[in-house]
Length: 350
Image (cartoon, rainbow, N blue to C red):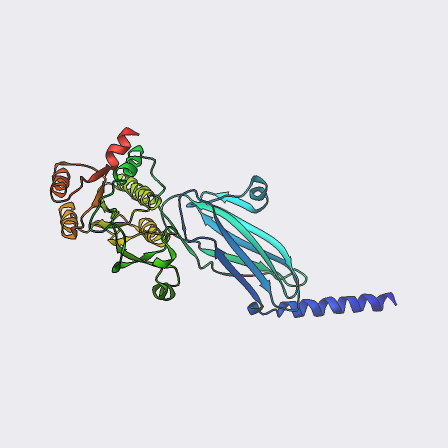
């Protein structure tokens, strides 16, 4: 009797082993998702993963490995790092081992941060699984399929705080109230506009709330003028931080703003709202600090724009005689004194 039971057991094990080796790789799925596509240096980002087994056979042993290079920093606790992480000079490898039953799935997450500005590909994953007896493991790999843009960190320059007072001035123009017959354009809904100002047609087309921009009395606006000079990358990185901080301040003050540059930041029409700020932060993260034209050509663009009541915020890596002369020319032909932020002076004062 015992030999028969042992023989049956061995036969069943052999059948399970043969069947598990026939496990089709198409029965194993893995999916990744990111909680954000845009972050700041040091900001925690969460990568979520789901591994699913659609086969009727269990996977007794499975392993998932993710490789984070030196531009990424895991943001998990010490116990997690001791159990799942191995670090060397090339980065950090995060590994998980688990059992996956038939028709089951496993979900998890990994928190990390990006060290510096730029565009990053999260790279590859490696998924290892064995047969029923664990005698012949197989490994599949693929691209995680997600990218993340790291924008510049906000700049702690104290002089930026003065913009609130400078831009707080209100100029009375043609009307005492909004004139609903004159629509200047459309922009994102910020939460401070009345519902009657929402354009439902434009909102339906864009998939987000859009409001009509009328001609109004308190016509405050700003133009962020960025001098892209690739000769000093260190100072230009500081300039990008200044651009990020200035735009955030303008958002807080609910002041519409546009951007002009002579480099790969390009130009952006006047707007306000989270999507407008996202566009600028995205350009900051993607910038390769490439300049296309000189600073005088950038000032010429500002003068051709000719918008009354607009405050020009000039951000430049350094101030030489030529740049100062261009700024004085801008001041002569505009109705407000330009506000100048210099990365070199900010670095020296710090």
